[in-house]
Image (cartoon, rainbow, N blue to C red):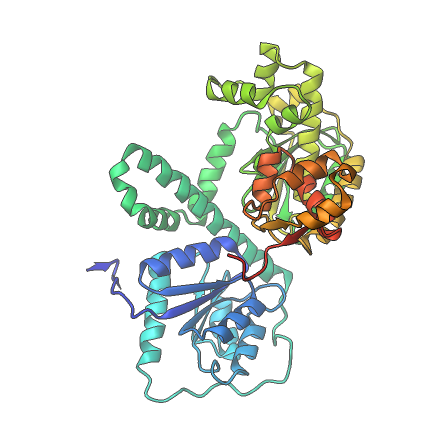
Length: 470
């Protein structure tokens, strides 16, 4: 049985190493190859890829060319210097496959190249061809001459990196559209649930760049208040968010700045250079409006849960709470100010993403909120938090980290010396809860919880779970 001419035969468990700094590309490639019977391991950059290849030599490497820390050329150079890996076939993946297909393939010793974004069928065709060819060799092919230069022979210019990020963003959006589309289909046709992976791959492949552009234009036309003209767009890896916010403030711009990262989308609404509101789609759960209302003792969790369960219509939560008399308009203003500020603090620490500013665009909810927040004060606190986050992340590497109490140390110090927040967080440290669990159960933000956990780690009241712990 064939699919568009590509064999669906089960491979003999060949191991593929996927090296790409885009989580979306890794997910798409892994999903496609695992369904075809391959064993897949993923690495987040070249250095990680070399380490994983040394631990378990792959049969084939799928390699992104433009990556931080170690790019595709440098990876291949390092790989060829390891005796048991020097003959491993490498297929390059790039947004500029035509450019890589010639000179770069020859210089890196790669055996093939594929252009992003690619369809599942195209990926499988390349992988199966290379593996079949390599298995059929009677003698090893000659490897490229050992090189002594540490830098790529062709400079990695900004255009190359921008093109790659654009292609990665398109692939990421295609995956999101596919996921949402298939979820809707499965709700209507539950009997199709066993085919969910195949459906997602097919839909993602169908949404190429042109289709996404058309869809995006249609959605923007439908979005309430989105009548502005695109005046500014780019990559946060090249233009930091702080500079964009300062520019919009200095020029006293009115419009909507949309920022897309992984996995959230943040919209910041400007009016004459001040910020009226920030909104999030897919953002952290601890930045939902309800959290701030509960923290301010404006509503109980039970009342909020009941209200959300019985909620009808399109009225925003805050407006509904004011109308029902749960909170005052001033209470809502204060909660929205905290929510908007912390959403911007969160985006300031993103290491990548894309942005687009639509001049003149308006959103009714921002017009109603009119928070009137100055950019300078938000940036001042935001950059302070970013610096603190960087320090905290050296010790709390992931929200999935599990921590243990040191009850003897706690008894020696005495619980009376703990602040209210420290005592609350410490109650949820039990050797099972992750940092994410603690944030959810304590009803505190992830930044506040991480900061408290960092302090408790520093004074020895808690410790990280050992590698050998059950």
